[in-house]
Image (cartoon, rainbow, N blue to C red; front, side, top):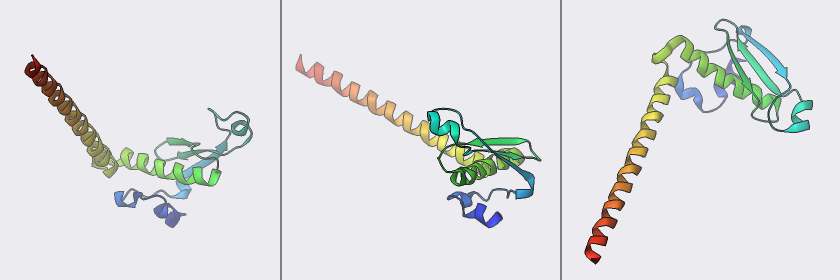
Length: 128
């Protein structure tokens, strides 16, 4: 079980807390949401519970139960890592970082807009 987890995704840069399969409780349920009949008939929605922390993850991103199991474990691992490490978790740090980048981008976009508006006003003044 464990090596498979480390191979999953490109998340191993995060050095997350490992999950032991023994601490996990897995169920397959019928997914909800869009998809109609296809969704209603197949039990490919994975519900994964980390028993010690009580964290539950539901994954129905793909049609394949196998794929969903893998994704569910990745998500759960991040959540469990956050749960135990709090702000010391690399997940938290990376999220903060991407938030910062987003705000930076917004700010720059706003400045560019201002600059363009300013330029337009100047041009209009020239024309008069």
